[in-house]
Image 1 (tube, rainbow, N blue to C red):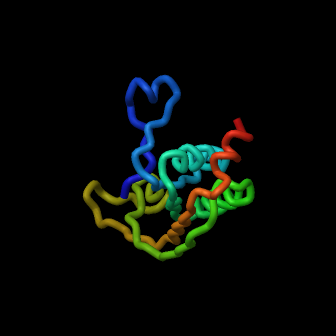
Image 2 (image 1 turned 45 degrees about the vertical axis):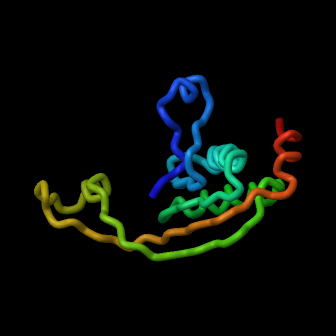
Image 3 (image 1 turned 135 degrees about the vertical axis):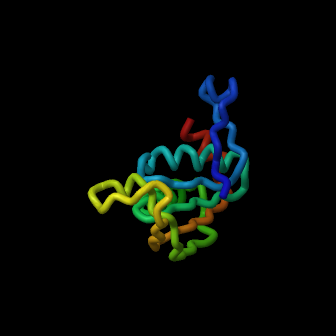
Length: 132
């Protein structure tokens, strides 16, 4: 799955984002303000945007999408929920559970996945000018 990548280029070093995809993988390690900013930058280059979130990051994704719609930058296209199986990371397994040897059995856990598809609003450009 691709995401909005920030490339290691001279432009990235100068503070410019190089956004290649219209997909953003939302994490709970950053707040919704970061994703609102990243979504606006993505919508400058693409007509639509898909926010992908797993587990607890779904809340951040919903708040970011709601802020974009409420402030006139985007309109909802679709919301899709899924339950997927993912491999539990070693970091989570090592929090006090039984220790498994290297190469031990992989544990699959079910996680909620949310995909929010937004499209650029008709007033996007005017709202971006007002914001700047």
